[in-house]
Image (cartoon, rainbow, N blue to C red; front, side, top):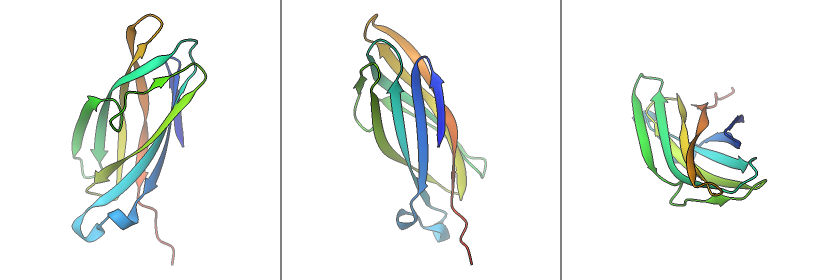
Length: 128
């Protein structure tokens, strides 16, 4: 698990290779990731946007940006957390993601940026 605290929000990431949704012979590797957002602040926060940088080990790079996460803009009260699962497809057996979330402090209505720590997605090696 990868974890980081940024502006009072802890972002934790777990990744899972999805062999049933992958096709290595066609260079299609699917990964799921579980994100837990914990509000360590003394005020409620609302997640408005996400921005991802996705790197494949073949040197390709793409960005994904949009509102909320999995179609939701959650409000997280102080001391509470929000968890969601999403996925990423790669063309190689390993890659990396990192990014940012744009949050609103619901006490002051000010926007702030939370860093999503870099995390790796790697196909597990098969034992003999």
